[in-house]
Picture (cartoon, helix red, strand yellow):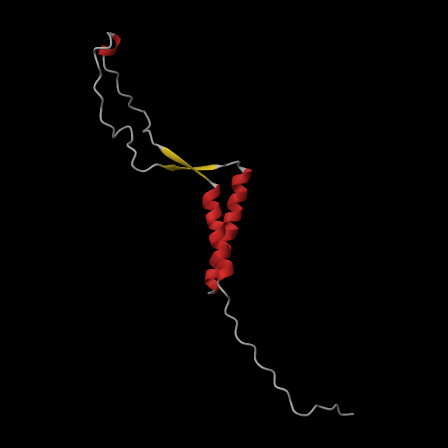
Length: 116
């Protein structure tokens, strides 16, 4: 059980330090890649309509060095840090440490007298 308490303490302290770093850098959101979105290279080509006018009749050249478009989702940084801190506190305070029973002190029947 001491290892569980130690993990809880480390998790709480890490959450506190990450909160301080986020406050110093003024970071308020975490950007994560959104799953299921297609990148620009994977999207099917759309046919060009020639009916809109003479300028649209020629297809546009593909951009060779274009970066793929990736969609991100923004999550407030408060929620993951609050969850990690609360979980760390629960692990730290909910588990009771193993303490051996104190040995009982033996009393002697007669008192010891000092020799003079």
